[in-house]
Each structure stands twice: as structure tokens, then as C-alpha cells.
Image 1 (cartoon, one colour):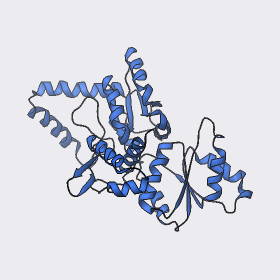
Image 2: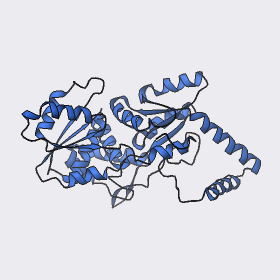
Image 3: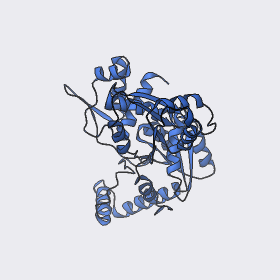
Image 4: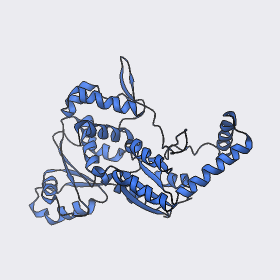
Length: 333
């Protein structure tokens, strides 16, 4: 993966997880170049890509700002809606009335509006038989994290690499089947392009804001060593960028990737991380592996690190909202 692609993913993750919030000014190209040791031209290129995808907005003479989060896209509607931005405070009748009035003002008759809404609802129902979570192959760990948290949905959920998503959806079409494809905001455009080709529903899931974890990092003493462990290499790269923005050079950061298919891979790196770090943050899938490493080598450690497990990769309410988006009702507890 190129340096610009890595930085694009890191910044998108930071924005999707609300470390950089809507309306917030991003670091200047000079500041970010110094933080990442990249050329300013590379940073400028990434900012242009983010702006082209509607994630940020460049204001002449002021800087680059995070735009208000555009919610999840339906691959058949021109008015994208987000899984996490559904407003629970507005009355259902008012929402339905607003939708109908919009279609009528667009030139449809009431009968055509009824047909349009019925067709859309039936299409969504047909897409709700299964969920495919897709990210690029080199960060399939992120898809696996999302799929784990969507496992309470009353339909099958599977992680699918973006590179094979087209083949997977084409196979469904041949068998006259559909699916709902989900991903995070910063993978939305390429995933949505594939889903649209096969007339599948595509939605973006909202990531956790990680407030608890950021608070832990904020309270660490200067010159502390913090370890981060995940099944997703992309999340670790993005987390490093966030830590640089939050604490600069005050902390020593170590990372380790856990391969769930072969947990013994990278054990030396994981052991070094656990021995050097006073604090270790990990996701749920890697937590048992980190715990076992600490337990097995406790006698060889000067001190046992404080271990924090990240409870959710997705915002806690996301699964319930997605279930409603798909017409599945309440999820299974």
C-alpha cells in the first residue's frame, strides 16, 4: 500500500471515529507532513482525495475542515441516508409525510408515489436476507471486527474482501438473491460502486468514538510506552496517527497485529510489546491472545501492563439502527 493510501485510510478512520469532528480544522499540510514524515505534496494529494469524496472541505485562506458526515448511501436512491444518523426524535408520520411531499413536488402523482415507495420497500426487504461486510483485503481485519458485532442480527453475516465482492454479488444475482453490503465510511465509495453495479443495498456503519480509550491515553505520563494490539493493521496505523495528534512525541507507541487464523504468528513482537508497555489497548478478538501472552510470560516481565479491551468497534446503537434500516426489527439479545 502506498504512503498516500495509508494516510488516506488513517485520516478517514480518524474522521469516521469522530476524533476529528464535523466542522473541525485538520492539521495543516506542514504539520501533518512533520507528524507523518511524508512530503507535503503527498499530504496535499490526500487532502484533495478526501475533498473529492466529500469527506473534507478546503476553505481558501483558512484550512481544511471536516464536512458534516454524509450518511450511509443506498445504491438506488439519490438522497443518501446514514445508518447512524436516523433521527429518532421526529415523528414517523411527519417523516413519511415529508417523503411523500418531496416525491409529489418532484412531479410524481400520488399513485406513482405509492408505486415508488412500494418498490423501494420491497427491494430493501429482498436485500435484508443477508449482510456482507466488505473492506479491502489488506485490512480485512476491520471487516471481521464489524462482522463480529453484527452477529446478533437474525440473518447471516460474512466478511468479504472488496477485491472479491464483485464475484460474490454476481453469484447472488445468478441465483436471484440479494444482500445488504455494509462497510465503514472511509471504505464506502469503492464498496458502494460495486454494490450499485449489482443493484444491492449499501450502507455505511458508524464507528465508535473511542472516548474511553482516548481518555486513557490522555492521562498517561509523558515518556510512557503504550501498546496497541488488533486484528486490523489498518486500525493500528490510524490509531498511531491519532496518538501523534493527541500526544505528539510524548509517548512511545508499539503495535502488534494478531492473526486469528494463526495466533502464534508474531508472538515475539507481541511479547516485546507486552514487556515494554505500561498500558496495552486491544480489540476483543485479540484480547484472549494478549491475556495468554501476559499470563505465560508474567515471570519475565518487570511489570505487568494495564490491559484495556475496546468493547466496541462500532457505535453501540449501530446494530439496532441497521436492523431497523433492513426491516429486521429488534436484534436478538
